[in-house]
Length: 73
Image 1 (cartoon, helix red, strand yellow):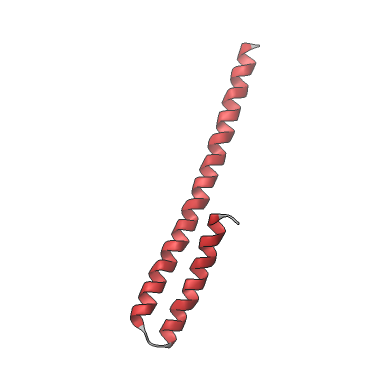
Image 2: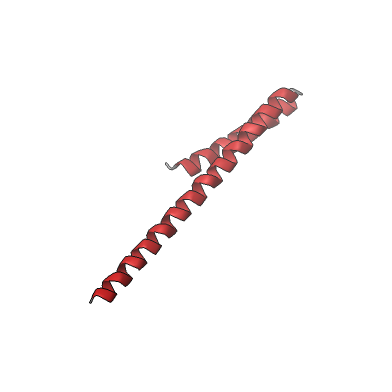
C-alpha cells in the first residue's frame, strides 16, 4: 500500500471522527480531528505531486540521454 492512499484513508476516517464529535457536541474534538484530517489530505496530495514530479524528471532524463546517444552516433 502506498503512502498517498494511506493518508487519504486516514483523512476520511478522521472526518468521520469529527462528525461523531460534532454529534456529541464536543467542539474541541471536532476541531482537532478536522484539522488533523485536513493535514492528512494535504500530505496525500503532496505525495501525489512528488511522485508525478519524479516520474516526469525520470522521463526527461531518459529523453535527454537518448538524445545524447543519437548525437554520438
